[in-house]
Amino acid sequence: MPRICKENDLGPIEYKRELKNMIESKIKKYATQMKFRLIEGGGTAYYLIGVKDDGEIIGVTNIYHKLYCKLMNKICKQINSKITKVEFIGEDIQYMKFTIESRFNISDIYKF
Image (cartoon, rainbow, N blue to C red):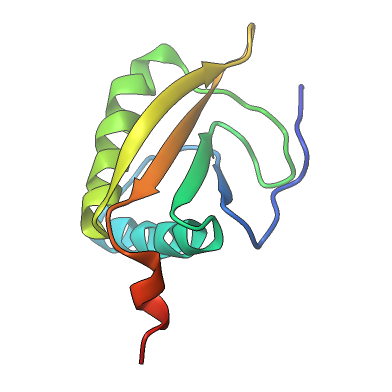
């Protein structure tokens, strides 16, 4: 299987194997995680769907493309952010790369 570098716990990049069984509590959990990644990236985060935490690319089949876009939009709305770009990366095995931009002011997070 092809692979990329291992996911880092810090920084603006998040890997997800898939976005299945997305009950409301899981969407909220992912929204909190996305907010962290946006803060780490100064307002921009990247989500790679179809990639394991160790960097192994497992890919996303075409039948899930539309569903994953809908789910990522739902997660973004939870934290006032938006998808600005969706890319399909790879030839034989493709993963999805979402570029997310915050609509909230990152500097407001640090005001007391």
